Length: 291
Figure 1 (cartoon, rainbow, N blue to C red):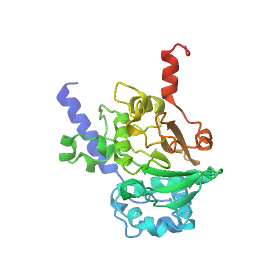
Figure 2 (figure 1 turned 90 degrees about the horizontal axis):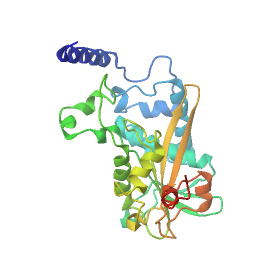
Figure 3 (figure 1 turned 45 degrees about the horizontal axis):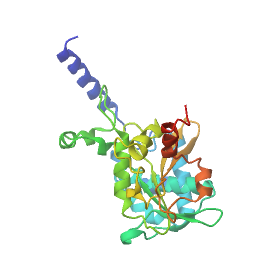
């Protein structure tokens, strides 16, 4: 097959893929009351297929019920009815809050004021009574597109294309998220950034490698290799799992060894999520303590 023939085949496959693309709620998927509310009048019904499966529909309804029980549903409603990007970002924040609540770290304040008079997502409290200021960032695959791709309308085509290959560096999006959030973190309270991404390749895959590249390694100016990010206690990589039977949440937590004492995450929280300090591991390896 010649190069031109291959290109023609790829374009035909992509055209077929576009024709099969479906939007809205699939037949047979039943929406809960609150999910129906966010769908009515929303911008995203013509952007993607949501929720794409009954397990997702049930999970979204649970998250929205949590928001309503905490008095936050009305506040989040405009974003939940926005475009698909806004909806996903709002759901990411609520999922993280729900996940922490179910792990005995309830939200005690929504939209707390951080440094520079900027709002965070929420403040949580440990069982021992320590507060943690939490910011959630949701970097998406759209941020991984080149300027040329954005100009050509690649963003409107959808996340995955048939036979598309690209060079990716998820760790760069981690540093991007830290930079975007860092101005909110005060120096007198525990601070946590949680990244719930929608990248081409999720931080779920190779989490420690991406954390090493973004935070702990010298090669890429790792943000936890010195005191430049001393107001940040740690970064959590959060993701959602769905086996089409049930949906659950997972998080990997990475501690900043250079965080200020008042900013460091409480030990009770670090233990609960089996926090990693890759910097300590690296130091041990360099000194020959680890094989």
